[in-house]
Image (cartoon, rainbow, N blue to C red):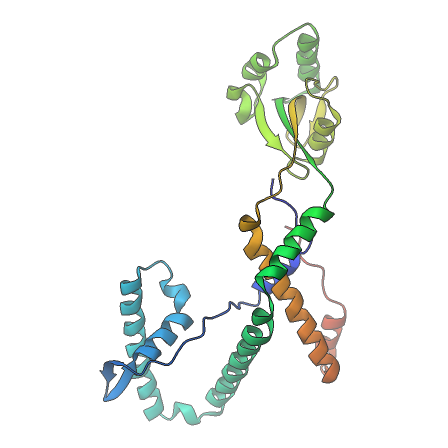
Length: 285
């Protein structure tokens, strides 16, 4: 079971910004192509690859460069045609360019003031803090027999009480996909099973089975606990990027809060003001 980092929702929210730190690109004026007499440089290509990376992420490097150059040539050609048509002078185009300029400045701020402020030492310290702050949690290994009636479940429990073999009874009676393996579900921790099943399983000691059928949305269960072990926390390398995202989001929110404090924001539209002050609850998964 994955370890539960308490700020995971914040990390997901940060990802929703659609931002990822772009590498700093050194200017390279080596000309690699000419379009209508205008040069395309190696620096232009590197910038295009950086900006369009999601489109070419699965391609090998040389194919990625070729695809990015093709895209850049098309951009230059069609942009020139739009320029001739006077598109750049239209108010809607100018408004869009201003938005893109502001967005680029926003990304630059995040890259320099947020991402640049998070160190490897901070990531490691947060990992150690999260691991130390979470109480030990056990995982249990359980087998079960799933049937469609309480009466049938009680009959199976009676057979177990008389010395019946749990695995054989599971193979003969269980309607769950685990039946062929004797009902074995492997190890699981809190939050992995429906509440009724989880509560019953964690209340048992190793070798014990439920003396009364357990009802869930799937039917009636007889549960046998076969082993218990402490939950193993993930290695630092497994969650370092997740923790870095959490720290990035926290730093971002702190920077935004400080700047908003110094630059008061007034929402004039009544409906938008109400929506911001009384946000709708997030949809449940």
